[in-house]
Structures are given as structure tokens and as C-alpha cells.
Length: 417
Image (cartoon, rainbow, N blue to C red; front, side):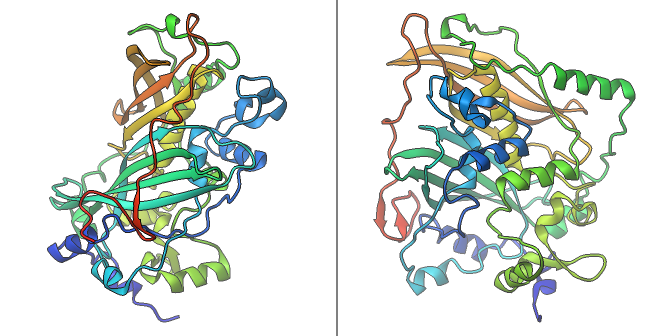
């Protein structure tokens, strides 16, 4: 198949025209391929949990979950990322043309996310999603040799009853590949070789992983500065990345094997580049291919930011127990998590309060690697039951979906249409 993908290899530049085209996309609904899961099912929920190392019976065992305050199995918070049917009205040619080729050929890295959960997903639920860009910012970046663009995305998930389930806001850094390769900031990082004592420490953390389960954690029993558990994730290998894909799917680029891969390459040829053996592979292979990762300025392949968010949520759902509710979470991917790295998930209580029916606990939470670097700083808001006020109240009516101007544009600030 003839393609111009090789012409775009490392050639993308951040230009005023590219930024203008990206800003023209603000508020315009983005159609997505069919989701990995069109309907929530106990098997796909279990597979998703296994993909990030979670065997919580609230999410994986219907008999156990039936006896919980939820009266049945629910999905973990991040399962919603596997769902979301989109239905977008025909976008006029002038709007499509204005946003065409925005920052084309410029590699991007998800660098932060902000989640707001409103109600859990249960087996049998179907989810529709509105997805649009809500902001574009030009910025300097050491990794990108001084030039970068930040593109802010928003996804709103609504169930079959037209009830808002979750709002996901996240942003990507777009950096020029040639500049990042020349900068070489991260190439000096050496891959860790673990001693037996260090491996024993990791095993001990896995052995002693806290899961509160059906023993309620009451708001009254939480205090600022109280001791908190530590969770371990890693060392990261190709197995962890492949296991993640088994539960999460392959992402919006729809990469696939064999003939399906060929058809996808016809659809988005610039996403495919030739590997060191001369045949085509997707750029996404930076997550499992060390050679490709080094080509773009990293010493080894690395994880996805959404994986680390799932690890943070795993920590929080284990800590709060079956009777709590993870309301909000935000984090930033400040450091790459390379193959061979270990992430230690830690947290501290920073505040507690009561607002209306809600018993709220605020936390700082982070992933810290074996080099002592905080790779992923974050914050979380958890709702807990109260001895005096009773069970949690799901905050299901406080937030509504963003209104639509028409079938293809949302009422987003900065939208020029």
C-alpha cells in the first residue's frame, strides 16, 4: 500500500496555523469508533479489573456484591473509559476544513486528568458519550526543546436513562519530536536492576495490600495526618501493558492485527511508521517497543497515564471500602513510568468536612518511583458513611451534561462556531 506516513516521521511542527486549526475544533463534537464495551457485563468488568491488578470482590464476584450496600455488582470507577457510544450530526464542510490537519505529525503525551463520578455503572448499562476539545494553550517545554501546545479534552458519559455517570477532563502535551529527540533529557536514565532484598520488599507490599472490603470506614474515624497504607505497582513490563489492553481495549486509534491493521493503516496512514525491520507498525508501540521509545527521546517503553489513574483509583477504593464512594480524582503525569520502574502509591488526608448530606474526605495521593521521584501527583475526594448521619448519598443531581448548540457543537467557552 502506498502511504505518505514516512514523510511525516518526526516532521510535525507547532505552527500558528496548526494552533489556529486546533482552536477551530473547540466545542465541535468528536465522533469516536465503537467502544470496547457497548454494554457493561460482569465478565468485561472483571477483565478490566484484572488488567490493572484488582481482585476486589465488589467488582468481580456477584454473590459478594449482592450483600453490599449496592445490592449488586458495580464497576470500578475507571471502567467507564471502556464505554461510550458517540452519535454526532453531520459536521458542515467549512467546520471540518477549519480544523483539518491541526498539529499534524506532532507527537503528544497525555499529561493530566480530572475525573468527576456521579453514579456507578452496573451490568446491563449502556453509555453514550459527548466528546469535544475545550481549550488550546501554547506553552514552553523542556522535553519538546522549548515549544509545546496543550490541548484540553472533555468527555461526558451518560447512561441509558439519560443520567450523567461521569465527566472526564484531560490534557495532552504536543511536542515536536525532533526537538525532543535532540534534547535527550530522559535518555540518561538507567534501567533499574533489582536486588533480591528490593524484590522481597515489593513482594511484601503485595502480600500485605490493604483492602477494607465490607468493614465500613466511618467519616468520624478519619483524621488529618492519620497513618495511610502504601500500595505497590510494578515493576512494569510488557505483560502489564498487554494485560491492561486486554481489559481496556486498544484506545481511540483502533489499532488491530493482520488485515484489520492494514485497513486501519489505510484509514490513518500517518499514525504508522516503519520499524527497524522495514515494516509498518503503529506509533502507539512506544508503550511496548523500546526501540521506538528511544526514537522519540525516551530510554525505554512506558505506560499510559490512564493506567496510573486506575492504580490510584484502586488504592482509593481499597482504602475507603465497599461503603464509600470515589467522587473526584485528578492527577498529573509528571514523569514517565518506564518498563522496569516500580510505582509506590501513597496518600495523606488533607481535610474533612460535611456539606449537605455529604461526608467528605480530601486526600493528596501520588505515585512515587524507585528513584524517589513523584511521577504522578494527584488529589482525591471521597464520600464516607457516618455513624451519626448514616450511609453515603450519591451526588447524582448536582451536575448536568453540557448543553448542545446543535447536533454537532457543544456550548463550550472559546468555541468560534
